Length: 299
Ligand code: GUN
Image (cartoon, rainbow, N blue to C red):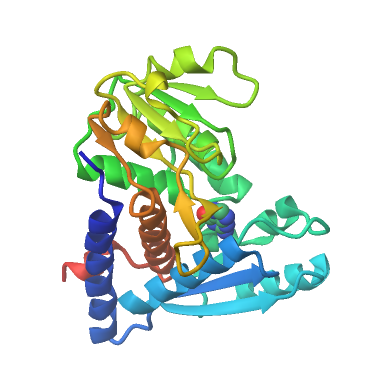
């Protein structure tokens, strides 16, 4: 069975749009996400455009700030400082990767932790690691929302995560192993230096592939009945597609899906959930910054 990120993300977006409308009816301003995009990396352009479009769809205000590739680190840091101080901005997102001359770490640390809707700031990562409430980065959060929606039990299950990035692999492994309502899994985190990867994957009840190598996971690496979460979204050339490319996951879908109990498609799986999670974080930032709680929607 497919885990349909499209359906679940639409449901989350609908619930958020009702909340935004409630805020408007009560004469509050709308939540506001500010996105910064540097250069013209094709994939980043697509992701940011999609984030902006989705904000518009549900009534969240968005602004896109663009720089060309040679923007200085200082200019970028000053813009972030300006957005930190801007009372009308709730969430700040700097699309990664950045040009080589700009320190990703400095940029991430410059964003105010209460506006860090990507959940990349060390303070927020620290809270996540200690099991405290924080902004959970969008892709891990989206995966959890998807698993929860389909009531996939992870308690005591063996989750194998492949890929140790700060954006996906590391935070999802911390979250799923934490002592939380949706946690308590036994997690193995694999990476490029892992030995016997195939044997470890074969032990997975739930396999999270976040490697960035299209079609890497084959049926012979997967246990019968496993749940497969494919985080990969690599652009591969496809002359038959209008854009000249299509998106391919880390999992060889046709090979693996007959063995899986559940599997996420690409596209239409985790990617859409990432956006739904980002929008959820933006609403959360708005409420926190305005000293409001979810009660505002129940009144
Ligand atoms: N680049 C790839 N994924 C992400 C993400 O979730 N947030 C940002 N800001 N950049 C990314």
